[in-house]
Image 1: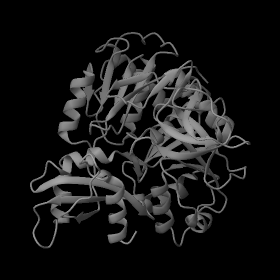
Image 2: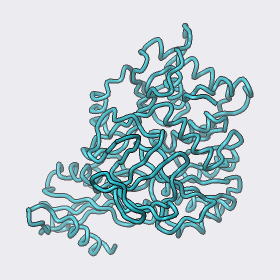
Image 3: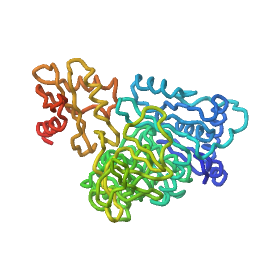
Image 4: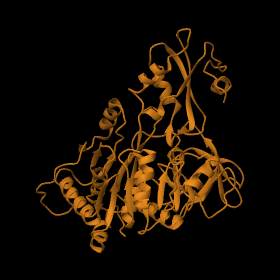
Length: 471
């Protein structure tokens, strides 16, 4: 169905022009209308930007965002998909680093677009820059080629049987690659794609029922919110739940089975730089604690600090070999990234058993995952210590049934006798951080445990936080 993103749209439209391709809340778009719109936008972009240049898409969830993303791909431009929730200062830093040729906050007017379509792009050229959390507080921009996503589509089809008869729903924000990938793959394969302008669990359940959704891309937090909102509902049309972003809690399984009685559950572990790494396949018994086996077309290697292969059962750095690896960082970077001879490591550590199942042992650094979002504690700590009266801050993740991890900040500073004012601190953080990165609880300590070198003893601080907060 095409070797580049968006190349299949015209053929799909010719085959069944009136078939619905994209649904967003109450709006529908046919294959013919989508292909025509993407064609016109591609011409519009070609008249204003050069081949390979970046186009920043700074808009909320809307069909126009999908159309512009596909138009960038078809025209050989790179789509920079901004998060509309970024504070203005963050966006300004990224704009300066990326220098996009064009920034769009809304869909353009397309009256009288002349000229031929741009030449089709090469499959190995980049078409997309997405963003993930960076340790400095500024998101890292990771660059993807057409081929890396086309090969990822092959994995989705081989592992989960996704195809043109499916109705695929990705209800979250398209600034997150999980949901953007789900929508774009559905359109590429000829399936119906379903999205929402804003995720709301009750509206999502109504949309699932109305459209007969068969496949759902979800974070564990979204899944649990659907289960809680659908206490008196069932969604028999759903055959597959695809979960990524964080480990979901198996104790919610009974509620999931009640709400989605015909659904199998597929979990996948990956990274923005790596795409699919392992699949916990619904048709296979996966050992407790494992994140599954290598995905279709993926080779795993566990290596020591010198890069030597380790025996089965020994823990080390996880190296991933596939054709789905990213091209590099468009902005920012990671000290943990390693790349050699077709393999890449992002600093995760783990081990393989004799059957090829992967077990994660943790991140080399302190990154946390809450509500499906990567959070670096250092980023949150830097914001907190800029606030008046806070001299030191340490942020940890404590277990939470809804989010997987609840962010907790331990603070040292000049507080009133009642301790830190949590609502005021959260309000102050909103100027610098999206909501998911703002700590939900704050603990004041006058005397901090320290290492022999005088630094904060993070292990001791986390133990104290767990004890005092009952975790």
